[in-house]
Image (cartoon, rainbow, N blue to C red; front, top):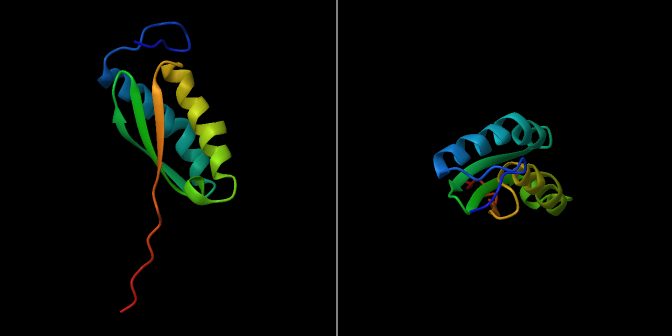
Length: 98
């Protein structure tokens, strides 16, 4: 079991989910939306968090920095170093011509 950055144990998954969702909604989503990107929380367990990014945060110039220098550190402050963070990238799809 991991620890929060402020020293407490990671509680059960629903509480972690709520806390991580709050960080995404209040901090990460507004930042990413200002750069034509988005983030979505997919899975939360006591030892793993999976999010999906779209737009420039997935494949644009600087996308690797956004994922490793912005998204991951923000989530780490909530869940600590023991929890694995996986960031999936959504491949954009082109509209079909008719």
